[in-house]
Image (cartoon, rainbow, N blue to C red; front, side):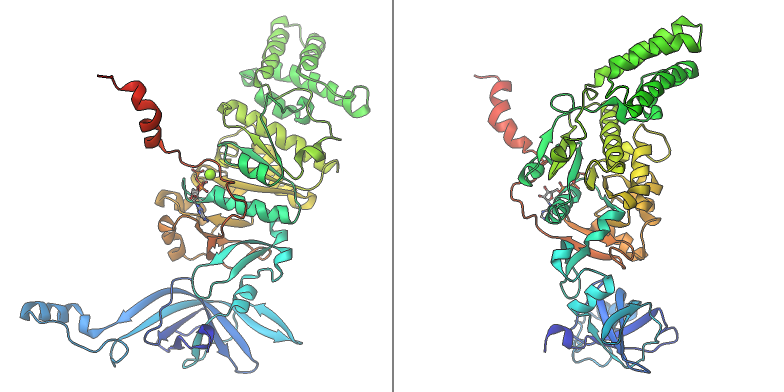
Length: 508
Ligand SMILES: Nc1ncnc2c1ncn2[C@@H]1O[C@H](COP(=O)(O)OP(=O)(O)OP(=O)(O)O)[C@@H](O)[C@H]1O
Ligand SMILES: [Mg+2]
């Protein structure tokens, strides 16, 4: 008999259970189950079906260890002496499972529905089989058509292969520093490459350069070998990036008028591109038509000229060259940028890509944004917020896929996380738990409470009908691309011993 053919327990009857939602199971002695293990309860009332439950709590009943019994032994200095669970008539364990799915057959096809049959007390209970887990979670069966990101950790070990379409409804990866987010992103990237989707990393910590190179892609540094056309931005975005212009409505209006004039010329083909210098010149022409205040025109031109400090704006990549640049993948190294420049780069890149994609000049793509709380902060505005919000909102219809990563779910815009339909939550500090309550899918309170202790590389995977139907802990698989990790914690002690001590310590 295989492990899934041996009964682990029996459906018990008490005053509260079984119900359509919850079942309590008297475990057979010697059987152990972990929280979140999927179990199977056969039912055969009117038609053959199988209920699938997910273990949530457990309880051991042992009258020999009641507080009074322990006290009695302690007082009399007696050792405990009674048969173990296997031979005992009074010691037993009960586990509680919530029913998550009912599997049934229709015209020879295996199907799922929400549980609607009452489990019968006395029925033997088994671990769910590999095939049942796949069906219950709504996973892909063909690895060639899915994203194999890891394995289940409780019950029968099952490969978690997400349907590849899940990427079109965006991913969210959250967890404290060092919990395994970027590593998991690497695994996801390997899978996405197998399906040939181009990937663009906005790499804030220099964590993806090695991976991008190993996957056959390139690394670009903004201002050095990479820049963007200012015409990629919207009028609001351009104004949002100009320092200190927010205080002056008049100056904003002047910039907007000049920018819009140039955009009209670009769209009608009068010009084929424009750069910051062209915008500044146009401000000087348009300004006097809008106001007699010469100072305001000069200030608008001067402040707009400041955009040049970012180095990110320039001749850009032509739409003919973009597909070859972004394919198969591209990491935009942003580590050395200041917070302000980082916003500018991300806004410019994401806006340009989105615009080109909507006009069908580039293929579908996946944009990966690490430290996403910097770009879509909760509450406050940011230059980049609009384009990321648009990306997650309209992306599904246009082949724009987003993966957002953050150490700090508390600080990220919740409406954006909610639009990311597949979520991988790694270890989180307890004070971060509230932030993910709104997006926990059917994860139980016990699952959330376990998050702070989640081991490195293990996450709570949750999603929707398209990705994964029920929340389940997942051990992320190993990366296939060797030496592809960036951002490893440096060995500071070795560095002190090898190179600094000799310089710093006085020689005798
Ligand atoms: N699934 C895994 N398998 C093997 N090792 C892993 C796994 N996940 C993480 N690790 C190890 O843990 C280290 C830290 O993981 P990672 O860099 O992904 O953390 P992070 O969550 O991105 O942290 P930060 O927020 O600081 O960037 C990795 O360098 C790797 O050695
Ligand atoms: Mg990381």
